[in-house]
Amino acid sequence: MKVTQHLWFAKDMEAAIGFYTSLIRGSSVQWVSALPAESPSGPAGSVKIAGFTLGDQRYMAIEAGPLDPFNHSFSIMVECDTQAEIDRLWDALKEGGKIEQCGWLQDRWGLSWQIAPRRLGELMNDPDPATAKRVAEAMLKMVKFDIAELEAAARG
Image (cartoon, rainbow, N blue to C red):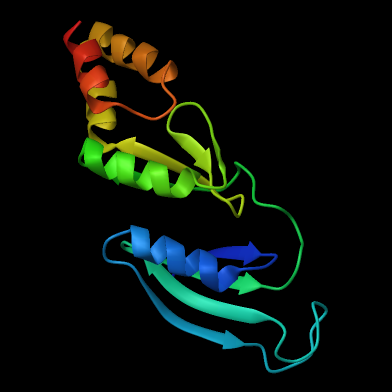
C-alpha cells in the first residue's frame, strides 16, 4: 500500500512543483504528463499531472483549472534544524504569498506551509511543565520562528 498526498492546482502546477522541489533537500520531480483524453476540465492534453517528492514524502499534482482553493485543512510542515534553514524557506515561500502566526504562511499558489524548528517539539515536550508553558507562550507571539528566542524562553 502507498500513501501519496495529492494537490490540485488551478494553473502553474509545473512552476509550483519546480519551486518546491528546488527548496527542499532530497526532492525531485519524477514525471509530468498531459492527460491524453478529454475530461470535464478540458480537451485532451489540457490537463497536466505530475509525480514528485518533497524530502521523503510522495506527492501527485494536477493542473485542471479552478476547483476548491487550498486552505488550512491541508498544509506542508517542514521541520528545520537551523535558523538559517527556517530563514531561507520562509523568505522563499512568503514571496507573493502571505505570512501568518506561529510559523504558518501561504505561498503564492495559496498552499499553506508550517516552517518550524525541530527543536520546538523537543522544548514543548520538556518534562518540566513550566518550561513547556514558557516555550508555548513565546511560540504563540511569533510569526516566523526564532530558535534562539524559543531556547531563551525555555531557560526562563
